[in-house]
Image 1: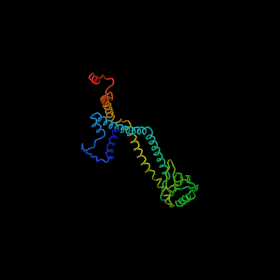
Image 2: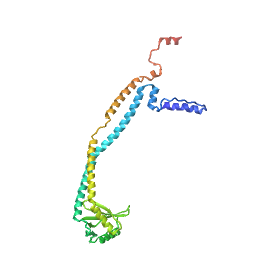
Image 3: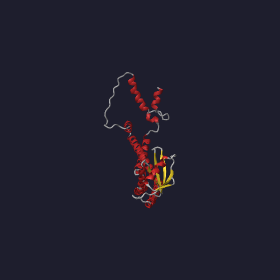
Image 4: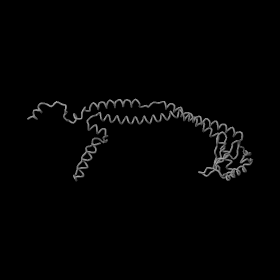
Length: 280
């Protein structure tokens, strides 16, 4: 703004000429005036301040509306794609858990009986022997890629090595995959496999609760995605008022710059007195 540059130069010139400039200011209010208020005070036109206020309020409302529409479009996309797919996936997982539970019931865990385990084609009927064979298979594993090594209690066993954590994992695969991290204890690893199979029922209940939650979110998203911007009427009202104020400001402006500055109009008629005075 040229006015700002000009005023700054006035102050700088006084300092550079070794003068001792004095400044005084009167408190107008405890709250500092905004740029819009200063401009309105300077021009004496209240419509300018109103226009500045409307511009600010409209900008805020448009920002709020933009955020609202972004959220709305995101919900619409979730209603069409995300939630139906998630509900289908969770429902399928529940079905898988239920079928795996039936498999576990066919091979129940008993204190006086060990369900046979097959490792690399060899069947082990003793818990200790099966645990040792499992650890030995880990030691002879040369590739980090998952490989099926046998079966246990109706589930196939897939052995893999996690290079990041430096641990061996066994995935019991039925309708779903149940992953277990192996340790170094012979009996402990068998117990971990049993615990994973016995814990399927708890995971099934947790998944059912998750499905209920997803369905509730789906219904809520359908309702929210249909809502309109709550401040639409306020925004339209302010836009209409801004158009009126801008029209008033345009009416206040002189048609010609020369008229505002008091410059003579070349096309205007010269009074006779001035002509006579020039002739004298």
